[in-house]
Image (cartoon, rainbow, N blue to C red; front, side):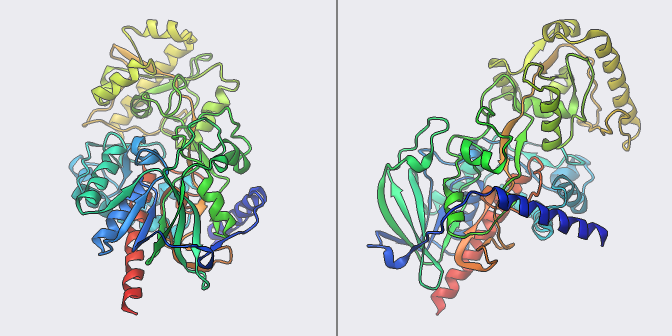
Length: 524
């Protein structure tokens, strides 16, 4: 009871804080009576072509809604999803069983709620973890190929089922959509959601042939390009437009610490254009102040870059030190929020980035092509001896070598006892194909992690079937949302690879829910 009361209190405080930070907006909905004409009519409209949008569109088709269309404002498909990590968190899977990984939905739920500081919506999280193996199989059935099961920070065990890159998920789904006669259009931006007199969503106002401005920091509200059209949606719409980590002004309103000079992993199209419109329409939003930085990116690259693949593995099979002290300063497998905060605190001023180190055995866990890409852009470097590495990064040698010896001792202890935690930071250790990997065999590899703004935990409040609430907590008929544009799934902080699960599961559910509404309307 105490825990529940504490969670309610924290949630209340968080919502109050968010409300104070939200920009003041005059509500200005567009109604059907203001539409001069309907240029085209569809059974359903999906806005956004990433994980959530693609899953929603395919779900619509599989549930009998064939007259649907999926649109994207960008000249390319997939948004952030297409070049994100492409790993899906799933528990109790056949893939885990084959590798002898002991996991449970209960542990997955516990990890997710812990990272979210129990501010997550428990019903949404439980649904996510319980359905995770189903979504994994659904993706496989639709042409997605998974290559291994890794471990992302904050997860107690290896449960991140990797594809290699996000486009290896979005492209197979989009191919299925097109093969089945679906319509996908680029360079179409949604400007308005159109309601009828009953408050039901009946369509959208768009601009076709939209020319996105790729200038960093450009206010998308100033972009007037494109030709205005009105799309009728008989069954409703699904908004899956993603987050706004690349919107320098809006994200700083939500979190004042996110200055314009802080880089992001997101593509430039990740703006607040849609979420601001939804808020002005009186759509309920939650957790808007929680914006996550990701610490698997490189200090030596802009945007997402290429080094993250090696860095991700090095957190699991390597060690990270402060070069000035030569000592570890955090649990390398901490979640993204904890990890990013620790690095930013240690590297205050940006002149002392940490050094993350892995030996040849650890580096063999990285796909060779991904390693080569990271090395090609100098985000990952190779050294024939440890002394060479120490000299290059100006690491405080004597304490570092003592730290290295202690670290390798921790790995030896973990190989004997699966419940072992290192006495410095409480870290546990994962084996790779039955072997626990130390940092001892040359050549050695290293990188300098640098956190970048990555994921927006907050967004539209929905039901478990992705129905959208208004500010009065009433469901808006015909309006569904899925993916990063929604809130409630991750709370204070998102665990890596839970986003792909979130997007694909709720995208699928949004499509199924809209299809049920469409069938009901047709029967009247």
